[in-house]
Image (cartoon, rainbow over all chains, first blue to last red):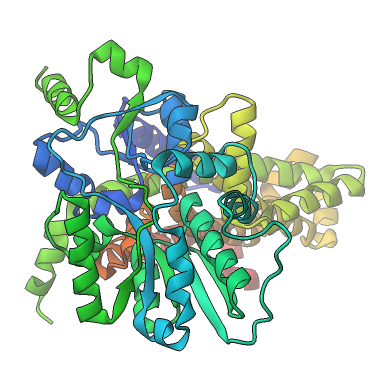
Length: 314
Length: 228
């Protein structure tokens, strides 16, 4: 066989494979986009489908949480797993479906600190507890939107908030770092960065502790394992995440009982202390475009489940 | 260890592994097809260009793209696509990013592969009365083939690796499993994504190696460069 005919055969085979690949690809787009953690967690997609008894016809698309909101607003997908305190929900006019079967536990954020760190720096608990109950859902949405929507720096947004709440003075300067250093962690999304900065700035301005920031860690388990190992001293964790994702327990719908349950278990198992919650509840939600919700008459997740099931049988 | 020990693993991840591997092949194959389609003719054209500065400029440009971290390149493409109203998530931005990344090795190897052909060989061909296109297809390209194929092989292996990032923007692929494993620190997800990706790289490289040998003209089989 001549080289020329071999080249022609090769080109033909390559084109054939290309055509087969394109032709066998599923047509139609995914209706839902979730982030990787939600797709794996028991209090995420696996548990949700079990509780409400539905499954999307096409596997949900996996997407970075930062991209989901625009994707649903632009109509690229129809459902996302939005965080309740994300400022883009009001900004993009999205609609949060009501969790009528109370599947998602409350996720009140609070500083989670190593007991050892609290013993080394006795002033720390008092300083961090000044933030207790200070941040409502609406406040957190606004703070998040300043970063996500307006492009401001998390550190500036955090400092501004602390000044407006009179937790630090505008002209205050950080301590001299003579009391040793601690490391604050955070998961890779805006709210965690804002909370991390907030705690860091508050500590720096009210003590002589030097704060090292590691605010862009890849997720719950990375932060939690680093905290257990002593690579982090504290980070902001959510009660529901602690209960369902870390302790692998069932949902406790009552926020106070849930908080007490994780507090007790974390202290006993790992000598980790939950300080007082900031106030807001950053639960997972299923979120769709408001227009779309009206058009289909969807108000609750059960409505969505019925709608998806009826589409499926057609 | 007996084979049955792996059964629960495949029961849990098997279907998704198949689906993601398919998506991964889809992304890699289309990206490589387009990249070869652009870089091979462009590389040949550059060796014929009358202005040596054009070649330096194009190769330099492709080199600059390569220096952008792949994660950042993905983000740039999303931003640019948002401005020109193209889809910012899914397969299209993923393939564009992969193509941009795959260009340089093919382009550079095509260019240098043809350039390194011994000028005396071309002189002989000209003396035999061969036309320029005959020299290209019968002399230069066959002699440059091992170098060009080496570029395509490098590109393919890189593309298979970089395609794991496409899971972040909803394009699927084995990166989906790896990102799930990273976010939840679960070894089984990491393995379910990594093992097929590594296997794909080896298989694609092997196939391309066979193709290279199959395409090499008989008289050139002992060409020293083809042993790499």
